[in-house]
Image 1: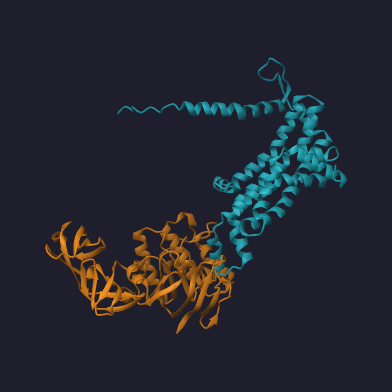
Image 2: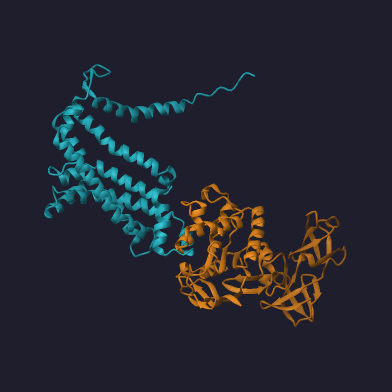
Length: 272
Length: 346
């Protein structure tokens, strides 16, 4: 029997796919191409000469390697300290009742409710008096502020979504409060908390305004270095090479995220 | 000998106005299954959670095997609780769910394996140890939850509406299974439910609760046949409760009257539908048929007294009755209540 059913062409889907490709993938392809280009002059559609010349030039610079180390150390330190401060706080917000709880909870939004640069300049003024300008720990402090929102709000949602009955069942079979937290609450909230940690690591790694305002010129992170490259020498390839370099950590982070976090927990983290 | 003794226990919640449990006392004998039965908000779950240690009594004593456990935390009590939501740990497989409590008790690994497998067999889930909780059906999850408590051999098993989230068929089957297991292990059990069927079919004794207080504690058949308050009468099974007055030994209500040898005053007459005979009457009708429902094995006649008070009667030949017909009522067994107590039973 002849098949009378034709698969209908989904034009809306095709249009969406094309638009998404143009908006998301195209710029990435352009930057990726520039990074491996030696010569690319108007009006050629593809580069005249591919090559790794600018990679050698970029990676030969000592300041690039210093900034990579600085960026990784900073992001790890900030995320670590943020977890130490925020996770117990998140647990308290989720599970305990204390005066001013709601106001305190919403105050973490305040850092994101104003134009950030104004806030940073004000903090920089204070840091100047405390001799924190141009120091590693000064940058750590300023970047900590940026992570608070993620590291409080998402884990609070994670802890709140853990079924209290599960914890009670653990108490019932003989686990003390600490054991319950370790064996039940944390594993239940774990994937969502991992998402928050990941977001704050990546967020810190790419943070530029605070790092530049507080750290420059002594402490230079990779994104800050990239900005100065682009400002000082308008050679597109330098920026492109650094962009590709900057993709690496977030790419690794996302691969890790795919293993640890399933979409359900991510959604739960955002109260979904 | 009583294993569990609850003595004058009250629970007032933090805001100070809600008395969830009000001066409650109960003795549960070794191996007995006692059902706490009541509508939602009657305090039955709160009472069970106090026995489990998840709520602290505001006053009163809880004694298990002669030991005062009123202020002992849940992890140190010899009780095992099965929650309505199952509360299985979804990040562990079935075996780990059951082994967790045994590990905390430092039981040797091969002994853990032996006991876990033994209990899984008991609840009909042999070979399911490596399954993940999410792969199980609702009934299987409930069995795992029961096994998780049983594997620790608690002195008292606490069941908090364990079948509420299951469908009717499964509920009936699990109810029989749980009763079988309970009798085989002779484990003292406290069972919370708002379903009278569950209570009547499973319990050795039923505690009917209302507003945190005991209405009646008795064997299921006695609770059914001889309810001590109008509330119990109305809550267990179907009961016609007719409010009227007694004068000179005659109870009357809107054209209906029947002899009731008690002193004059208000009274509530209680008649089960199966204890009410109906006869068709064109003259001197005491009520009017409103609706007839044929259930195959029997029929149910909804009728109205002259003031529209609704009364139900069970009949063996529903085809004899039609809506609008006049009927006379002849109760075979009645009880009468006044001031929340029985004043007459015949």
